[in-house]
Length: 353
Ligand code: HEC
Ligand code: HEC
Ligand code: HEC
Ligand code: HEC
Ligand code: HEC
Ligand code: HEC
Ligand code: HEC
Ligand code: HEC
Ligand code: HEC
Ligand code: HEC
Image (cartoon, rainbow, N blue to C red; front, side):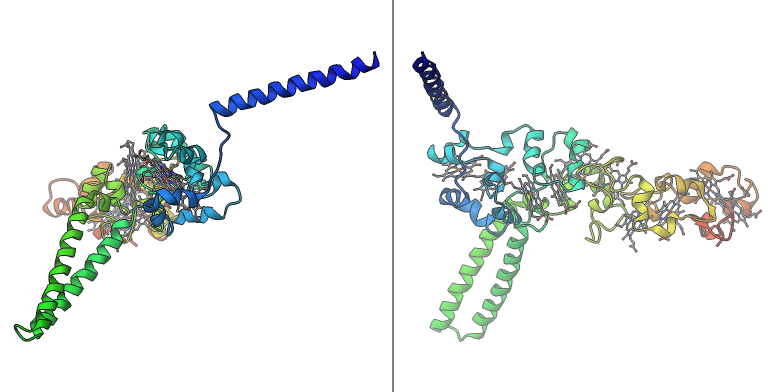
């Protein structure tokens, strides 16, 4: 009796053990346990991506102890099966084929900066954009926006300079000399190289257009592009300002602005207009867009309409009754000729100073 008591549990244990082994083998066949191989292995076949990547910001992930957050496999998942299959592309995560929210999740597992995690609240996420519409995850760019073209442009400048130098050299050499022939050949080679580069720049013009703000935004926001070219505009084209000085492209409460409200956003650079003042001008405290268009206007000072009309929208019966010539002129002149402190004043209730 005593023996049996021991044998039974042992047998049971054996059976359970076998069953567990079979089961895990079966599971193993259907769905191999993820196997991380490391980025050096990827380099064997994807030298182009890796070469570019060796200067990229994301290279810093190589320092991570967790293989799920290290190198190529941080975004593409474990590469064991892909490699064993000789580069079977069905066995590697291809983010461009995922649902936009799943693709974003790959990035958001590391990017926990507050302004980025707003992403699900943004119009961009709701419109099914992916992070890669603006960022190149393999890029060497400082902000991971596409920047390849910048280096090509530099190369172009360099080549142009070399061609100029070579031309000078050719002209300086005596005719029919072997030196001249050699220099002429070199010049032709340089010119051919430039033609090739020019062609490649042309074919990648759209890429160049994405290379930095505001161009990356213009790709989709044509209306704002048009407005940026109106006579009065914020200096975006001039490179002194970016869309992201006012907007957070990753989300936000009100129109994806960087601050809670329009006025708070404007205040970050124009504090002297936003008050507080002893004598406030009500529409200013309310919202700067009562009078200004942020993106561009045909009126001076980004005004929504000609000044006299703008003011009379709210001040229909001001001190200038229609009729008398001087009064008429006053009514249709620039009100701020006299009401200079139009955003508010600490000393004058009609905003003279
Ligand atoms: C043995 C060579 C080899 C190795 C090693 C290898 N790959 Fe690949 N990879 C390929 C081939 C071949 C393709 C498929 C190309 C095709 O069919 O267009 C591919 C495709 C891919 C794709 C899909 C490309 C697309 O067009 O969407 C990704 C992503 C990828 N590999 C990532 C990796 C990563 C990450 C590693 C390292 C973990 C890796 N590969 C290692 C050969 C390899
Ligand atoms: C930070 C995340 C991230 C890392 C790290 C990363 N990739 Fe990618 N990779 C992506 C995304 C996202 C795409 C899809 C791009 C798109 O949507 O067009 C992609 C696309 C690709 C493709 C197919 C398209 C192409 O550009 O050729 C290959 C191949 C590839 N990756 C290989 C690699 C290799 C090799 C490494 C490591 C050296 C690597 N990736 C590291 C995110 C990453
Ligand atoms: C494994 C973690 C990890 C993943 C996944 C990841 N990143 Fe990163 N990312 C980093 C690290 C680390 C940096 C380096 C900057 C830093 O230290 O904050 C970085 C930098 C960046 C930067 C530049 C920030 C700067 O300040 O220059 C951008 C943009 C970016 N990542 C976008 C993405 C996108 C888009 C994806 C998804 C395709 C992604 N990242 C996936 C870890 C990651
Ligand atoms: C519509 C374009 C756009 C999209 C889509 C986008 N970004 Fe950005 N991202 C930017 C711009 C522009 C900047 C630089 C300005 C800034 O810091 O706000 C930036 C900056 C970043 C930075 C650096 C933040 C820092 O603290 O300096 C990270 C990280 C980043 N983005 C990650 C992501 C991730 C992850 C996604 C997808 C969930 C994403 N981005 C989607 C445009 C975009
Ligand atoms: C791939 C296309 C695409 C790119 C690139 C893009 N956007 Fe958008 N954006 C959209 C779409 C789609 C919407 C939602 C519909 C609309 O308002 O046009 C949107 C909406 C917005 C809104 C309005 C948000 C709201 O709540 O009304 C702002 C602000 C914005 N984008 C800013 C930017 C900025 C800044 C950039 C560049 C860093 C940028 N976008 C790049 C497609 C894009
Ligand atoms: C000076 C600050 C500022 C700059 C710079 C700026 N915006 Fe805006 N943007 C705003 C404000 C303010 C709104 C209105 C938000 C509201 O009323 O809720 C807005 C609204 C938008 C909207 C929503 C539609 C609309 O016109 O009301 C889009 C899209 C947009 N901006 C895109 C862009 C793009 C793209 C750029 C760069 C080319 C850009 N913005 C530059 C301040 C700015
Ligand atoms: C990131 C800083 C910044 C923010 C935020 C900002 N501005 Fe500006 N603003 C500027 C700069 C720079 C100029 C150009 C000044 C110059 O050329 O001397 C300017 C010029 C202007 C002008 C004069 C335009 C002209 O044609 O002379 C107006 C009006 C204006 N901003 C209104 C606004 C409003 C309204 C907001 C909020 C929606 C805003 N700004 C947000 C930086 C900013
Ligand atoms: C009641 C209409 C009105 C409102 C609301 C308003 N402004 Fe103005 N703003 C004007 C007028 C009119 C001018 C032109 C002044 C002139 O001709 O001297 C102007 C000019 C400006 C200028 C450029 C001139 C300069 O002195 O630099 C800036 C910047 C500016 N406003 C910022 C703002 C900001 C920021 C807000 C919101 C806090 C705001 N404005 C709200 C009417 C308004
Ligand atoms: C969106 C409506 C609106 C616009 C546009 C507007 N104002 Fe006003 N303004 C007001 C309101 C409301 C008051 C406060 C009236 C009150 O307290 O009785 C005010 C007050 C004033 C005052 C102080 C005197 C008073 O009656 O309290 C002056 C002066 C003035 N505005 C001039 C202007 C000028 C000049 C412009 C054009 C640059 C202008 N306003 C544009 C709404 C507006
Ligand atoms: C030649 C200078 C001058 C011009 C130009 C001018 N104003 Fe005045 N405005 C004044 C003076 C002076 C007062 C103060 C009257 C008082 O203290 O009783 C005043 C007072 C006001 C007041 C407050 C009293 C009232 O009548 O409601 C408003 C509002 C006003 N102006 C609006 C405007 C508007 C709108 C324009 C442009 C269409 C304008 N002003 C152009 C000189 C001017």
